[in-house]
Amino acid sequence: MAGNDLGTLLGGLLGGSGQSSGPGGAGNILGALLGALGGGQSGQGGGNALEGLIGMLTRSGLVDQAHSWVGTGENQPVSGAQIAEALPDETLRKVAQEAGVSTEQAADQIARSLPTAVDRLTPSGEVPEGRSIEDLVREQQF
Image (cartoon, rainbow, N blue to C red; front, side):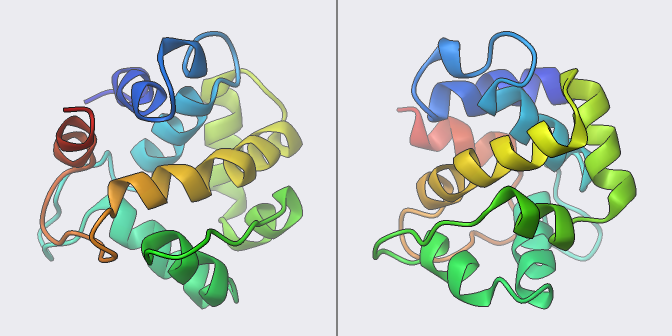
């Protein structure tokens, strides 16, 4: 699924179509990010883009934040600067270009919307294994 299609799904998950419309919309940014990290599809190793993203964030020192988003408690905030530090430069540039915003704007938008998106994609307090992002989003929208 293309980043824009995934962005539309994520926009709906984050509170309606207004979240994904226009440059830099939350759904578009997250769709571009997850697309850049693996297209949201289950990979050969059984992982998906959400698992990869959580792993990347925890390896970058955002363990407490990432675990709070997956867990069932309160979500800890993260800053755009922390997101920019955690993501590979090429990934952030690709996301920003696809969303039509600067890398700083992309990192800030990811920081604002990622905690809610991860929280809603992991309602049981665990990252579902071996399932695509699209399937997870569709399950949460019903």
